[in-house]
Image (cartoon, rainbow, N blue to C red; front, side, top):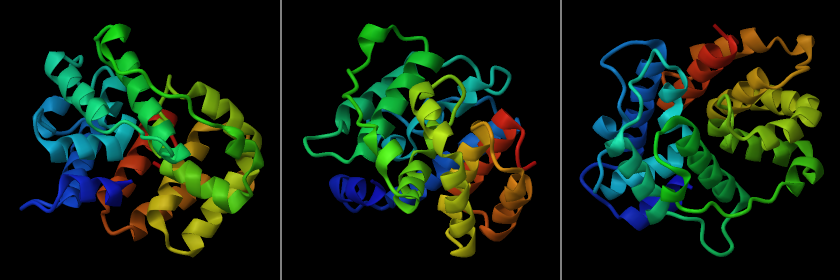
Length: 238
C-alpha cells in the first residue's frame, strides 16, 4: 500500500516513508507516556497529501494513543478532520486488495471508537472479504495478517479477531518463519496479533520472541509501534 500511495502523492522534498516513520515514532512516544500530550493533528496536518497517505498506510494505529485514556487528550475536531480527509482521499477503489479494504475499515472503526464525531460524519466503509482467514494456507495467511497489525487494537475488528483465533497455530508458524527470515516488520505484526489472540502455544516463547525482534530490528519505527502496542495493550514482550 505504501508504494502505491507514494506514486499517487508524487515525489516531494520529504519522502512518504519519512512522514510515515515520524508519525509512527510519535505514536510510540505517546504509548510510552513520553513527550507532549498526543494529538494526531499536530503530527499529521490537514491539507497535506502526504499526511493523508501516511494515515492510510498506518491505519488505525494513528489513533492508538486514544485507546489509552491517560496517554492522549480526547480526539477533537482537528483530529476528526484530518482522519476524514484521509478516508475521503484514499478509499479502496474497484478491485482493491482485501488488505486495503480491511485497513480502511479498521481506520473507520477506530474513528468511531476513539474520536467524538458522530457516525454519520464518517465515509461508509465497504464490505471486506474474510474467506481468506479460513481458506488461505498459513504463509499467505501470515502475510496478510501481519499487514493488518494495526487492527489488533482493543475494541475494534472483533469479527476478524474471532476468525483469526481459530488459526493461532498457523500464525505462530508464520511468526517463527518471519523471525528466521529476519523479516522484522512481519514478525512484529504477527507477534502483535498473537499477543491479542487466545491460546497461543506456550512453546512459541512469544515474549522472548518479541524481545528478540526489538533487539534486532535496528529501531525501525513501524516495528517499534507494533511491539509497543503488544506491550501496552496486551502485556506481551515487555
